[in-house]
Every structure is written in structure tokens, then in C-alpha cells.
Image (cartoon, rainbow, N blue to C red; front, side, top):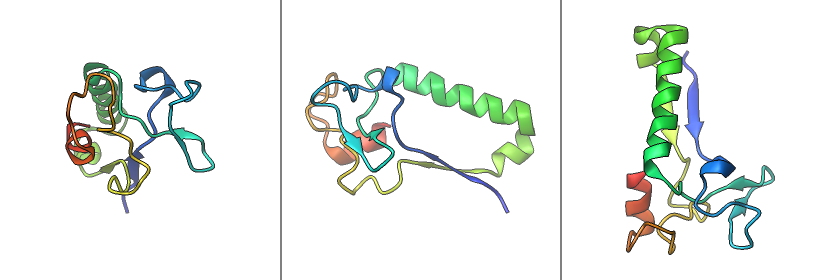
Length: 100
């Protein structure tokens, strides 16, 4: 049995629209931010650091067998990428998810 890591709600410091902002998107009882990152380079560095941590803690072989899911059900109304987000140009909801 292997764990499944779900990467979904965006950390406030990285969200393109912070929840405190009137247009920020909160979902579920977790009040998680469902906006894409304001900076994909920083997002990539964060995910890279997570991967490095997993390899350091569990070893490359074990970490390589773990499952990661990026945003459960992105086609649902929770994901708010591609909706006029700063720096995303004309990305659609689907293409902004693939960018993530």
C-alpha cells in the first residue's frame, strides 16, 4: 500500500487571488484557496522541494513508487484557473490546469 498525496488548495502566499481579497475563491469547509499560483516558477520550486524532501526522507526507490494527484477533479467548479487570472492571458480552465 502506498500513500496518495493530493496537491490541491493553493497556499495563500502563492495564490493569484488571496482569500482575503474579495475576489479570492474559497471552497469547501476547509476554506481552501482554489486559484492558480501567481507565479508558476515559485510553484515549480515548491513542488520540486516537496519531491526532494520525499527522496531525502524515503529514498528514491520508495519515493518513486508514491502517487501524487494534482487537484482532485479539476473539471469540477472548484478549480478557478483560466478565469481572468493575472498573468494567464487567454488560458482556458483546462489549459490552466495542464499548466499547473
